Image (cartoon, rainbow, N blue to C red; front, side, top):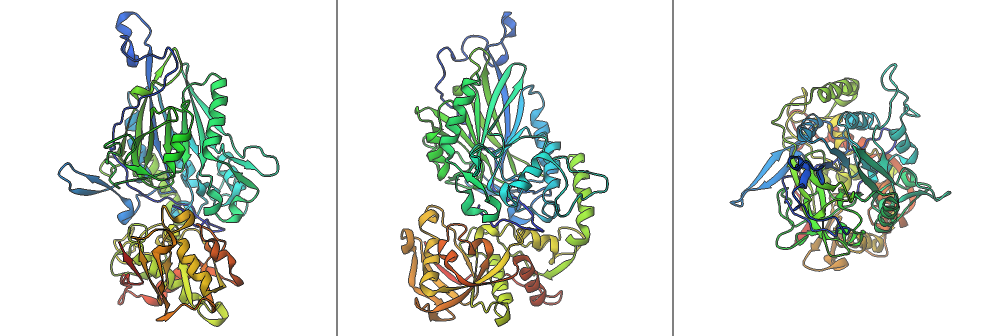
Length: 609
């Protein structure tokens, strides 16, 4: 989910998605000559009775993705995973939170002498206040305690630029805000962040390690980590300054060859790019009826292009839950997994390692997603970590900003027009409409920048219906500065068409619009034609292609982010307050304890399905 990157008071954060006990697909793999099946009496490391050394051992690969600094259980619908029961009924299961994730992973590791834990990026970035306020140091500390062995970088690891990413890896206190706790210096990540497809423009050298080799008792597994090639399109220009992002397939194939030459025959790719299963239920079988039939999106073509030397793909970015097999270039099925987001699921994959060939027996790879349920004991070390950082955040986090009468869904809404999207766009228009503030006539908000729901139920001691600064921050964590620019009516129409065409055609990004703008979206059509141009009106009047309009949006969108190059053509720019400041000002102006803000109607975009 693309999202606006953050600045200064920035925070990084995770979106939650559905995860679960998905399919247990078996994979058929191209094995090197001699890497025979397990039918020789000593399979799976259990052949001791014959006086022989076992032929194979099972390596447990535990994986997750898109944590986005969600140390506390994500609130509201964003904290649920969905499960479909055999009778077709669908259940929403509250999941996630590092206290439970730690317990789940520690429990899963028991009885597995060979266990490795890996992540597919966006561990930090777009985080709730508890982590974001402290530039995600709390999340790195939690991941160290979780014993994470390796992670790929995701696009959100670049939200604050390469220098800040290096600090998260290597440690040291924040260059502006210093050390957060007296006498404590931030140690950095105990695990390597891998960025094989990110190089420095000046030198052409990799920004971070491209791969790492995990070893135990002679067992060796190589991990190659990449982020999506399109990272610069979804991160502010400042965040990716001086960096070049390369093709995922070419990069992985290059380093797989290098690992192979070093004698590492077992390879796992960690890829911060993903797909969309046909069902959002974590237990959906995306290999029904055939391998990979139930999944679409960029990861499918990537999986089909990655060399058969790679034995499994751990993916992310789309916040979806899936355990699928997708054929490799040799036509052999290969496991491709993703564990939703926000720590709501983890994937448990069994890799059978042949001690003679040093390769994975791909025909016996098994994998399933498991819910990080909240009805298991909390890990006490994580509870202490959360309490410690919460004490530091409390003076800022607990300040009330406004009042709501019911949940106002943003991230948790699957509709093109989201109630919280309307509130945010209205807040931006209202704050920037005065002549001296930019004279805005209309405002647009990118859906990926809405990171949570506004939840009626109290998160702490503030009382039901009270929106705290911490909750508002969790919704708008990037602290993007707002821009007001001149755009012609023709450019506005083009921007609306870019929601459903070009890079956004396969997965439309429907902008949230301020009150007064209305139009029809016909999803039965394809590409730009989905926007019915003669229905686009502002305050009841048709948009005039030749006229100039003052348009408000965050700096990320104004730079053409998320596949909206038309917005980057804006002129006569005025920089306003931050998105979060405008959001909080709107809550203060439009709600009180006696008269809370109700969820707005969603009647601006008429959708034809």
